[in-house]
Image (cartoon, rainbow, N blue to C red; front, side, top):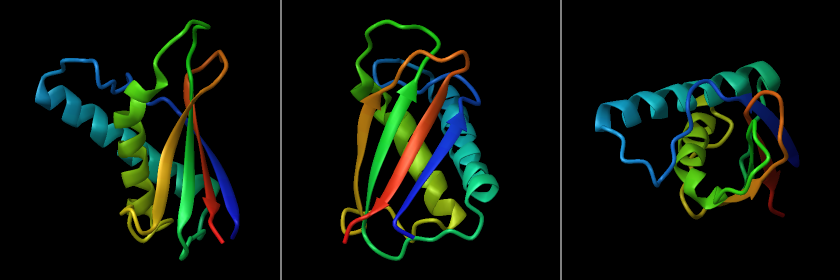
Length: 122
């Protein structure tokens, strides 16, 4: 497999590095995003696996068309990448296997979602 693109509907509020959430709320959101990413792999790419280093690009699509600092959503992206590992799509997410995630701001959509692109690096 050379590339895979997953669309993950936002299952709960975003995790943003500027937030000052109580640790239990942050853990709850992290668990939900991670579990949802795991489920997206099973639903959209069943049996897919990358055994080579990959580049991951994460595009955040929100319901409003304003400016935002997409880098602050790296915490959400980390939970998603951990879900990709949980699903078996990636063996691990250490720096020898994964470049990124590179964060991108997407366009306004009716429903918030994250589009994750995983590409093999040859």
